[in-house]
Every structure is written in structure tokens, then in C-alpha cells.
Image (cartoon, rainbow, N blue to C red; front, side, top):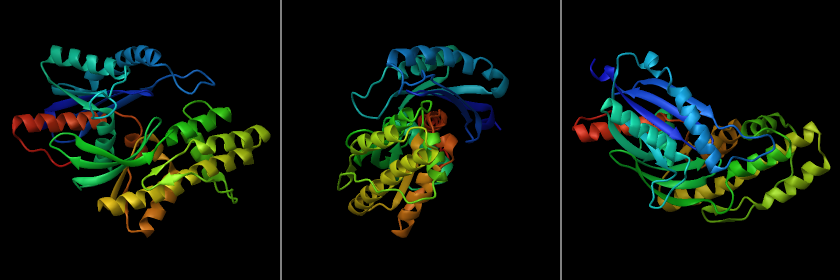
Amino acid sequence: MKSRNRIVLGIDTSCYTTSIAAINLDGRLILSRKKGIKVKAGEKGVRQSEGVFQHINNMGELSGDIREEIGSSEVVAVCASNRPRPVEGSYMPVFCPGYRFAQSLAGVTGARLYATSHQEGHIKAAKWDSGLNAKRFLSLHLSGGTSEILLVDSKAAGYDIDIVGGSRDISAGQLLDRIGVRLGYDFPCGKMIDENALKFDGISPKLKISHDKGYINLSGIETGLYKMIDESRGCSEMEQMVSHMALDAICNKLYKALLYVADTQGCRDVLFAGGVSSSRFISLRLGGMLREKEIRAHWCKPDYALDNAVGAALIGRDFYFNESGDEADET
């Protein structure tokens, strides 16, 4: 009963979303809130300074009535992402508001303060929801700024991560957003592109993307798709075909990269994390291709693939148990 009344808060302020979550020491999710960063029509993102400003406002709004949901529960720890990746020198200004807010909360409540990375939070939330139990696995992190194949080893709290493949130039998310903005969609565009691709029932031309062992390049298809869009603007069938071509090419090349990495690393479990991995097209097509090669693809629900603070809260819970000497359930 005491564990149920003690909670860990997680905070994440990424390039796209302000998030706050709470989980009790029994591992039950108490709350998960998020608010997107507003992007002007026609733009492909926001400046870091604008993101910082919006995060400050969003944090005040998201945390305003949090006491009503957590009730009389004691906040024993606060964990926030303070950098994009768990490597030296990894830094983005947008993570500062969330971590500073966490510092303030810890100072006022007397809770323990922990820091993690945005990437570890993505992996933790996806792993927790997918049910994957392996301590060593591959993770395909697909987001607005990242398309990386990672070799992941679990630690007491967080992960040791090595990049073993992925895109050498733009990310899958950047490609989809750029195509979507060209089509006149609001940023971020991944959901619209995904819906278009699923509606397409024809045969689309195949796009060539260079690849080298576990690595691929995605920027080469951008120019060709731009030309198709400009020549057939306003045609819904064209929009569906372009969307299908882009996602189909991404799946085909990631498939080859994952096959290479799975064989060379001797690892057959692949966890999909990051907002782009919430694509239904990718899960259906790439998931099916991997199954044929006896590679186990692990997916989570979209809420835990998209930016969220659940992973930060879970990692904070691990830190807390590790320091206290108690044992937490594997998540």
C-alpha cells in the first residue's frame, strides 16, 4: 500500500512536445499529459529559442492541477530528460526548461532528482508497453530528428547504447515532414502521410536509396518526390502515391539494414521506438518482412512511441529502487 502512495514524476521537453507523467512505485501509470509545440503554417519546425519559450508556458499549464490527479500521494523522485542522447556533449536548449522545472519540484517537495536522456526515455516507454523482457536488444529509433539502429544493453537505470546503423543524412521523420509540408499539410505531417499511404491501392514506382551494410541515405528521394508533387499538385491520388512511395522506400531500406545488423550483432529482437514508429504502414509492412526472417519486432501503442514523459518516470523509478536497495519489477 505504501508503494501505491509514493510516486515518481517524469518530465520531457523535446523539440516537438512538452510532457509530464507520474508512475507509482508499484509500476502503475497515474497520469500522462502532453502538449505539442506550435509550428507556424508552412514551417518545418521551430527555433530552439521558440521551443524553450513554449515549453515554459506549457509546463505551467500541464502541471497546474496535477495535485487533483495524484491526490495525497508523496512525490519521492523527479526524473527529467536533460539531453537528446546518453553520450558526452549531447545538448539541445529545449531540454533545459524541463530539467530546471524538475529541479524546482525536487527542491520544494524534498524528492530525489534524477536525469536521463530523451532517447533512453523513448526506449524505456516503448519497452514497457511492448512487453519485451530482453536485457540486450536492438532498437530502431525513428523520430523527427533521428533514424538510428541501436544496440541496447540494460543497466540498473537507463541503458548503454551504441549506434550500429541507421540513416547517414536526414531522418525518416524529416523526409516525411518535408514531403508533407510540400503537399500543404500542417507540421508535423507523419500521420497524414501514413493515412495517405494506407489508402493507396495501386502499384507505385520503386525508389532507389543507397545503403551500405547497416546504414542508408534518405535525402536522395526528396528531389524526385518534390518534382512529382509540383507536377500534379492538388491530385489526391498523387498525394496517396507519393506517400506510399516514401514509406515503402523507408521500409525496404530499413529492412535490409536491420537484417545486416541482426546477423552481425547476433540479436533477433528489435524494439521500435520514436514517433515515426507509430506509423501503421511501417508496422504492417516492415513488421511482416522481419517476421519472414525470424526477427522479432516489438511494437508499442502510439502514445508510448510518440514523445512522452512515461519513459523518464520509469527510469526515475529504477534510479529510486537502485539507490534504496529495493528491487523493482523489470520494465
